[in-house]
Length: 599
Ligand code: GLY
Image 1 (cartoon, helix red, strand yellow):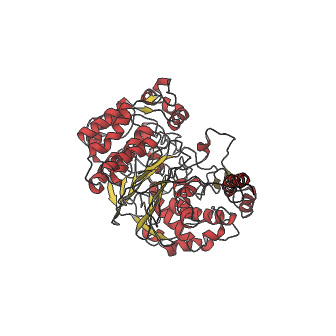
Image 2: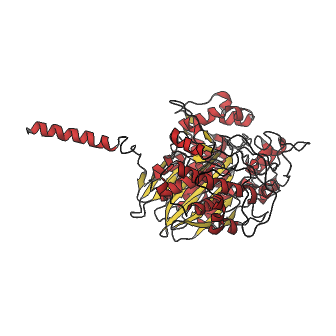
């Protein structure tokens, strides 16, 4: 064969073989995770991930970096990043010690169980979600300060971890696509509070993508926190501004409430799944208990052989989700106020007992499904009622994952609850407040903004923490961190976290495959499987319907600019290759500004 023909055939092979490997016959090409050999930060904002890396480069550990990223998210991702809300941090030190920092918001001292009801006992729409009355006492600054003091490297100071956020706020950054979209999308909420209209909508002159976005008041708030220390938020000028704004607008949070706020260390909740150790969030989140219950219910089943997103697998998972959410509604609340039978609920034998009513052929109707009877149970009146609609879309929280070169791992989920919280910017401070009070039971049998039915265990009381679904989690394999994950999304958080973990462990997916895969969600009530676009084929859906499931398909339109609104979750995840130790980061493409970066 002439030389030029051989060269031509070689060139053809070079072009065609990779194309065949990516053809529909062999599956879609997958995006690669971000790789690093040392540290990595994955968050909903590239600038906030960079803030964490900046602290790591100065010698800080994963805890120090997590604080810097969390503070920076307040500036670059105000829909959920916050100092006016609260959340949870699961920390695993490289030497194996693990702990949780609980900085969940607390109900103000003036809160009462019926504060969201009118005189006839009916829930007043919007009272627990919009405006001053919806806010719990913020915990983020106290939580970050406690984490830094007890688990930081000691090599970077409070002022240093605050600095990237202060700089981003005071000097500004180019308006991002995601932030511009968020501000536009929440114009109505933000416009209903004059300070939010001034700060976040520039009184109607929203900047275009790429224009510099400066937040002078927020920069000043961070400068005060740097100078005076974290208690400034609770006892200094910032506390005064919060309390005065509350008093002017009929809110409940007082100077005394702020002064009394303390973040807590709690023991991490531990479980196992197919030889992996699961470190996750105990009450006042329901997330960890539900996650461990679901994993225990799945363990006797060969999930891998059911096949990814087969009807049999989605059916099994929906049944497992249904049962865990039934228990959530009945038993869970703030453990400092009610007895939560945690050990009984996560006992694998108990979880397996919940599945005795499982049939591979038929869906178990949620109506009439009774909760189990875990050991240590204190009976409450179960919630009743049957909300017909799936969970509302605006579920705003954010999750980020961090690992440092030494192997310290931190999984943080924190929140304002709704998108831009209660819509209120505290006058003169530049930050938004949460509407976390809606996570309490406003009235037994009436769904909250997530369509969740909750019980008396989660009733409102002064100083109490509302029940959460946040599920920051670290999966450990052979005594080393393996997966750091979690998600926003109200109740969908728990199921998104479950899916990411099982995608990796059962199906052997890469970090990016596990995060990218379309999600589904069942929360007992309403009795339907909520499906992200492209979850399954129509014939798979018909098989599920033939088992008795109702499916709610999120719509997706061609070239839909708001596609993210029809998806849910933002599972910023890091997987650590057990063989090489390389960090493999997967930012979640549902969040346009997200980034996993490392060095
Ligand atoms: N605010 C959402 C959650 O904590 O579950």
